[in-house]
Each structure stands twice: as structure tokens, then as C-alpha cells.
Image (cartoon, rainbow, N blue to C red; front, side, top):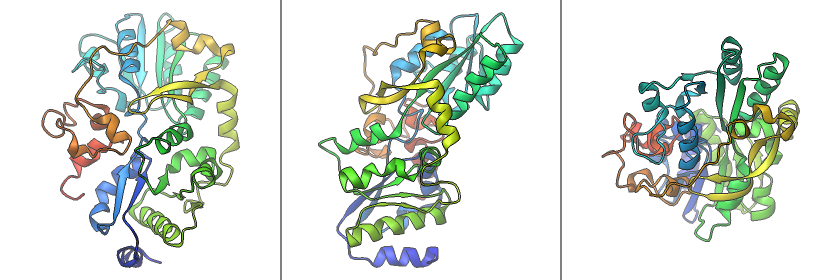
Amino acid sequence: MNTGGIIEYINSVSLRPVRLMEVCGTHTHSIARAGIKSQLPANIKLISGPGCPVCVTPAETIDAFLGLSSDRNVIITTYGDMLRVPGSEPGDSLYTRKALGADVRIVYSPTDAVDLAMQNPLREVVFLGVGFETTAPGTAAAIEYAIDNKAENFHVFSMLKRVEPALRTLIEDPGFNIDGFIVPGHVAAVIGEDGFSFLPDDYGLPGVVTGFSPDDIWRGLYMLIDMLTHKKPCIKNAYKGVVHKNGNPIAKEFIDKFFSVRDDEWRGLGHIKNSGFAIKGEYSLYDAEKFFNLKPHKPATSSPCLCGEIIKGKAEPEDCPLFGRVCAPDDPVGPCMVSGEGACSAAYKYKRII
């Protein structure tokens, strides 16, 4: 069925009001850019979930690496999305710290940070390892690259997180009200479609693995609506060219070699058991938390930013009193606005068509 036929079908089907969640931030921006929400009937609503790794990084973690940037012997390396993410103090970010003299550099892969460490043997180079299962294999490969090249001044601040525990926490929240999921395709490429079988098996909820083009997303929506209509929840894979049933075994081996599972903090979702990746003890030299004895502390004050509620699907970006007023991409208050995958960023950028 072509996209036109799918839209016609979705608008004609008789179905109770349903709320569907796209977990991945890339899906969120594709949906906003294509104006997909505006083409759905009133009884079908799309909600953004906790699929933006920058957005779910808590303020105390951001404060920890901001403090580390003050050490003149340290070079902070990061993906571009982390540069403007504010800590607990308004306006305090790596961008600000860099302007004040901190050595902060954008890299395009973690191995670039290892190369930088080899070029600067008298300084400590810290890579901010943010992401989900998608970026964990590349971060693990960088540690191996550092070991092979004896770059003992390279360290990873692991902020890597696991998607399944977060979705379980979300679903088990008493206020949870989601009927189906567009699961993150990039994560599924690593852990496989079977990595999301807990949705129908444990909660009776359908899920679809799909790509990121508008046609891919419409195909995924069709599958979800069809499963809800016939009350047959399962996991369907509309991204078979990239995602396989059991995922990528080599990527999973890299994760298992260098990381162990630990409890972790998520912005909006709180403390979640077994939801993070810690660098294994035998590689502690490359663990920035241990090397620098970093111990994040919860900030004393809270912000009126609703990023936490938006991540949980309990609020829309426009519900936040700061949205578009004092919070905008050029001067963000919360991570959902600053990140290229954030729901607020998408709503602000494409507000005329969503």
C-alpha cells in the first residue's frame, strides 16, 4: 500500500482514541518536518518519548563534566549536541565554559578523541560518551583503540543508557497512557527486533521497528493501527534491510566486553535499575568517573522547565511556560530544546506544520 492509501486507511478506520509514542528523537524530527501529526485523524495522537540521549541526561551529570572542564590539564571532547546543554545553573554550558577558556572540542567519533589523546600525551582527554545502545559499540571500540595504542590519557565519561529499562519504567508509571510504540530503529539495529519483544509479551502493547523517512513512518503507523484494530499486539519489523531479529552480534560483543550494566539516573524518569552502562573494572584507567573521582550531586534548586514531563509523554512542548519565550534553540533552558533530537527543538523549528 502506498503512502496515500495508508493515510486514507488510517483516516477511515473506526478506532477508539489512541496515543502512540515514537521513542527515537530522529523519528520525532522526521514526523515534525513532514507534518505527519497534522495529517492524522483526531482520534490518533503521536507522543514523543525518552529517545533523546542528551535530553535524558540529568543536570547533576552535566554539572559534573562542566566542573571537570575547569581543569586546565583536561581536554573535553564531545558530540556537538552536548555543547549548549545547560547544567543546573542557567547559562552554564560547555559552550560558555569554552568561551571562558576551557579546552572543549567537538569530535565526530570517539576514536577522534583517542587520536587527540595521542597528540597531547601530557594532558588528559575526556570523551563524553552519551547515547543508547546505538553509540555504545563505537565507544567500546574507542577504548580498545586506546588500549592498542597505549593512550592511557584517554578516558570516557560514560553516560550511556539502555532503552528497555526506561520503557518499562514509563509503562509501569500509574499515569501511563500509551497504546503502541514506534521503537527506535538505530537501537534495534544493535539489539534486534527481539530486543523489544517485552512490549507485547509483558504488557500487551504493539511495537513497530521502522526507518526514518516519512514513507517509513507512515508504514509503521499503518502496522500499529492495524494491530490495534485487530487486537493482535506483536513486534513488527518494517526496517528489515537494517534491523535483524537478533541484532548485530559483533556490536553486542563489543558492549559486553567493555561495559557492565548499572543503575542510572534519567532526567524525567528518575533512578532506574539496570538502565546504564559502566566501564568494567579491568578498564578503570579509561573510566573518567573513577580516574577523576567524579561524584554527581543533585542540584539544590529546580527549574520550571518541563523537559522531564515532555520526555515521559505527559506534556507537550507548548505546555511549558518557557517554550518559545525564554527558551529557544539559540538560548535554551532545557536539553529538549538544545538537542538536535529534542521534542522542543522539533516543535519550535517546525511549529507551523505540526
